[in-house]
Image (cartoon, rainbow, N blue to C red; front, side, top):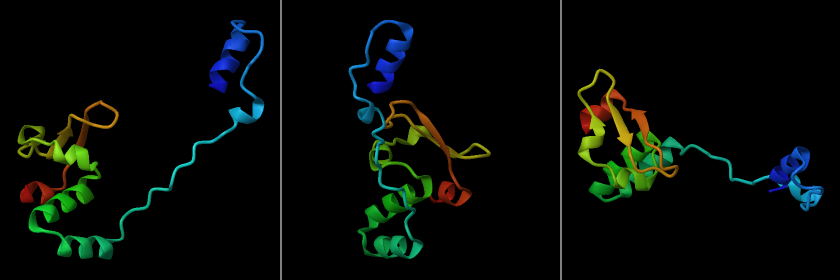
Length: 109
């Protein structure tokens, strides 16, 4: 909001920025993304029920979100192409995303 008000002030739309200077510099804090350690992934898949094993492997190999994988239909897979792909139609950002599949994952699917 502070940046928007700063632009509005520079454009002459407002005379003063109502957002305090210290509020403008608040940075968003996110936990760092850490890849799963392979031995932990293997342990998890060994202990998971058979159907969940496949889902866990698919998530790990594509990097997709649980919701994306759960809403996937066969029509979204292009396994016959020279470079097999999956198109995630329902995503967090609401814009379709295409992910290239490894030959191994394409064979397994």
